[in-house]
Image 1 (cartoon, rainbow, N blue to C red):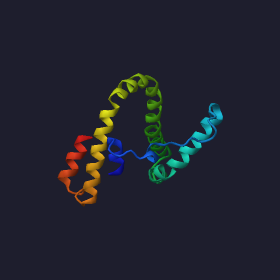
Image 2 (image 1 turned 90 degrees about the horizontal axis):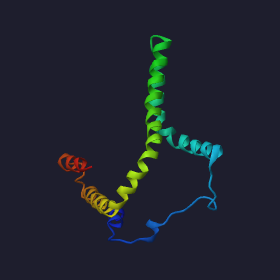
Image 3 (image 1 turned 45 degrees about the vertical axis):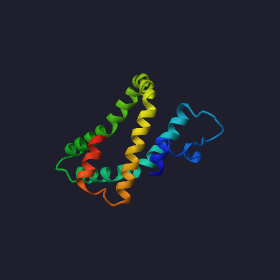
Image 4 (image 1 turned 180 degrees about the vertical axis):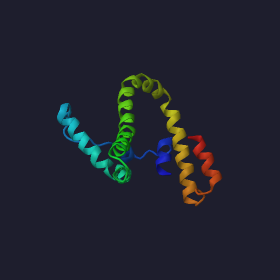
Length: 141
């Protein structure tokens, strides 16, 4: 609820608006920077991907033929990799769209803040689990 009030502009807590930068403003680009970023993403995603990957490995290992197991692993890899490739391609084209959306940032921030406060009140009053409230809030998103 506090974060929602901050987003709405009702609270003005400075520590929620600050940011910290790593290093001394040096830019880490090139192959080394990409490698380090890949390591960080891999370390962060291991708990998320691990369950699905272990399940598909068990499924592929118990398949009837080698080619069926290879096919299952290939489909899993494509399903994991294609969205990342599409996002990387779309980022370049979406920069102009992001600039247009930035004009509406105050309205979007206010709306998101209201939703966060409503969700906080529902959680605090233990009414979040009622399906009618949940369905209406999910429909808003």
